[in-house]
Picture (cartoon, rainbow, N blue to C red):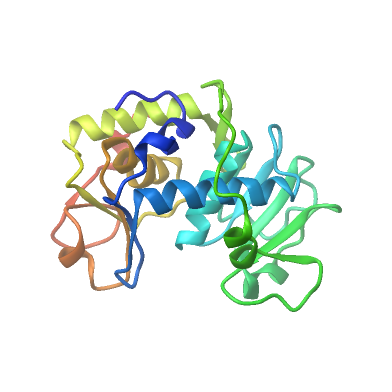
Amino acid sequence: MDAETVDDLLTRDRRSERPALEDATGREFDYHWFCTSTWKAGNFLRHSGVRNGVSVGVVGDSPFALLAFFGTALLEATTRFDPPTSLADEADFRTLVAPVDDLERYDVPQGAQRVGYGTQPERPDVHHFDAGLWSENPSFPPLSIDPETPLLSDGERTVSHGDVVTAASAVADEYELDEDTRVAVAGALSDHRAVTAGLIAPLLAGGTIVLLDEGTVADRADVAVGGDGDLERIDLERVPL
């Protein structure tokens, strides 16, 4: 498909019953669920101050972590996967999304919001992503994101929507990804190339993202980003990013 920014992958016409995501337990989520849940995530994170010009830390590689990333992208903010625990001096850091049990490990700037997923937070100042997500509006206003808008940061380098989508298109072409391709994700999402090849490229092709559980790679996917085993590997060194 033709796309310039990540929001182009999450439009209303992309909703279907084809699988977009499979979690580590083997549970499948279709494109209708994925698009609608991402819109909900964006609406929820907006309440935490996520907007253009701020950064969001996302910890983990569960479906909730992915929804936080894509919801952040819709709000034109920048995601930093698996950020360092010391973030107090990061002036643009606005929100941390992490498993509830991990939140206390992070020192965030004054005024930054903590959003927990997985279990019910005990602290009243922690937002519960799971509950908030499902109660949110399942629609999102039309977008016109500039391709130069920052999408990902690792603390040293930032890449834009346009950079990532262009690189993902090259990956999809080189590895002939299509609607039937299942891409297993084993690479660390703190690597921009792993996000590009493991998340954006399969969505661009209309395929399926497969989140790995150790020992199940060969049975569940066609090609992999990172990890070990006999599957064909997408070479991150060849991702033009």
